[in-house]
Structure formats: C-alpha cells, structure tokens
Length: 497
Image 1: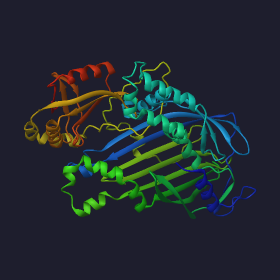
Image 2: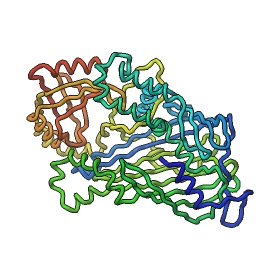
Image 3: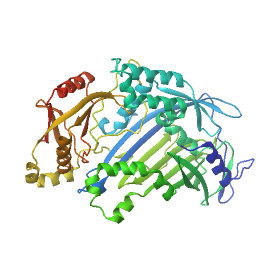
C-alpha cells in the first residue's frame, strides 16, 4: 500500500507549488485536493485477476484462470480540517446496472458479498490525510467482535466444533492481525480509496507535459526491504473538460523482490516436485527470480484536484507463474476517457467453477475481496478438442480407490466457510499423486459410498495426499466426515464422463 511519506515525497520531487492556476506552454498546475463536503460521489469499479501457470503443464494455457467483478461504491467527505478528513464509503457487492454478460462472469461479486457478511458491515468510515490516503478506521471493535462471534459460533450461528478448530484454521491469527493493524480491513474491503488517493495532492502542483520524473521508496515484504522506482509523467490536458491525465510506472528491484518471494517459490516447487526434478539448471535459476511492476493512468480534475478516473495493472511473475490484476475506477458523474483492458469489457469469460455459497447471516451485507485461493477454470474449447482427440488414452486411465487416514470439518480462515479436510494414507497419497498427474487438464469425479460429491478440473498434481471439499452445507460435510472415519473407508476417484 502506498504510504503517506513516499506519496508526499513523490509530489515534492516532481512538482513546484504556485499560487494561481497556470496554462503556460507545456506546463499545467494541478490544484490541491479540495473535495466538497457532504456530497456523495458514486463510483463504478471493475476488477479482474488473471493467473497463468502454463510453465508447469504440458498443455499451454491449461492452468490459465480469469476472475472478475463489477461494483458500485459511493463516497462522501463528511468533514475536513487542516490535518485530515472524515470519509464514509458505502459498499455493495451488487452488479451495477447495465453490466453485459451473465452474472457468472463476475464471480468476484459473490466472494465480495461473503466477505462483507463475514466482517458484518456494508460501510466504512475512515480518517484520511488531506490526499485521501486512509490512516485510521472507525468501528474496528464492532468488526472484530463480529469476527470473534463467527469464530465461536460459525457463519450460520451453528456452534463451532471448538475454539481449537478456529485456532487451527488460523481465524484467530487473522483477528489478531486486524486488531494490530486495522488498516488491513481497508486494504481488503476498499483498495479503491488508496488508488484514488494516488492521483491527489493536498497542495497545488505544477508539471511539465511529457516530462518524466523519478522517485524511489522502500516496501516491506515479509521483513525484506524492497526498493521501488516510480516514474511520473503528465501525459496530456483537456482544457474543455478541465482535466489532466497522469501516468505512473513502478518497478520493484528484481534482486530484493526475488529474495522476498523465496518462501512462496519453494512452496510452489514442492507441489511440483516430480516435474521440478527434470528441469535444467537454467530453468531452476529462472524459477527463483521474481518481478513486480505496476502501471497506472489517472484523470485528475483541474477544478478540485480529485481523481475522476483511474486504471491500474499490476503484474507479478515468480516460479513459472504470472498473476496480473486489473482495476478501473470511474466517478459516474463525469465522462470516462481511459481505454479499458479487454478482460474488463468482454461480454463473457471462461470462468472457474468456484461453487460459492452465500454465508448465512441476518445482517448479510456486501463484503471484502481477500486474497482467495480459488479452484481452476474449466478447459477452453481448444483444450476440450485436445482431450477428445486423446480419448483412447483417457479410457486407459483407471479409477483409483483411496484409503482415508483422517477427515475433519474446519472453518476456512479466508472465506469463513466450512470445508472437509481429508488426509489419505501414504500408499493412497502416492496413488492419488500418480492419478492427478495423469489426468491434468481433465474433469474428474470423486465418490463417497458410490455418490459423486465433487467434480473438479485437475489443473495441478496433488502431491501431499490432502483433499479439501468445500461449497457444501456444514451438516452434509459432517455426515461425509463420519462416513470416512469408519475403519477401511475409501474414496473412489475417476475421470468424468
């Protein structure tokens, strides 16, 4: 998250404060951020994430996954003094009017709704600096109390298995982190506030059109300090619309960022241990390198210095994977001018089968966008053709019968939903590993007592003999767990029909 310190430093380095607006040749003064108080501003927010792990699979694109969301949020500046502002955001997971495509193309909305339910809020009241950067949050005690209630009683008010279950799931660790740093709630529920603040300065600034200015700062990644270089450019101005378009390009230092990502890289390579054994020294060295860059376009009002539109793309590459996130924010009372990435405008997408169930709550409200671990997308049409052409090979892959070592229902620390965690015996874990490697890119079926309970698309080999069933009523999960605790209980896994 952008800190106030480096933001002020960036503006100081690239700008010269003047006392009156100026339209000289090649330069323009951007006024200090001075929003009207008591006026609600509505914003349309579009987001998407693209994940590609094709390096680890024989079929290019077999692991590609895209998820997106579209939201309608509203912001009101309640008050302002010489040091800070009070700002209220109303949050919603509902799709905005006029969205093309099926609701299934916007699965972030379903995740966001569950998150708001978990936090028990549909609004955030912030204290910000004069640029709009959040620096404190009201109502933290109520949010934490809500989460503690869920930890004790479960999402639907059903008593949890016990405090130890919630602790083992990590939920109390999350609560402790939020108590220590309440701004994590803002980062999860309202990253838009920080992006809008990126283009705003509480002081008037003068910039030269086309002239780039570089600044630097350090970011902390798990205790590793990573230098980040930022380049600001005033791209153009529009005298009629009274706007200026700025661009920001950022890149993290490759060596330091790679160092910060080594634990995550090691975990991923462990999951593909068999494949990693066959990689060359150059390939292994490449996997251990990581990079992160960010590009932002901002349209700023020359009347009050507020950000009217912002478009951001963040790309992270590490361990043979690429994660790219897109965000576009547009204040709805002003015309949009930035070109949107195709992923945000496509009428429909090949979306992953998330099986998202709503969290039951009497106060159900829209919710947060956490960093969620989501199942992979179904194969594209071209991949289906490949599988069909290899039909004889598919038939040759026999079902496998797996013995269960343990089966426990626990609460997810991320989605606040229950899941059945199954651990296989060592022999069955090896069988399951071989099966999942053989059926990569294909749909499978998992059966308990001859009943199909899950039909996952296999996008990576499962190496550790652990299976998680989610998206099902807790009572059903408990019933399956009881069946699997019977001595000699087995699971049948086979290719889908």
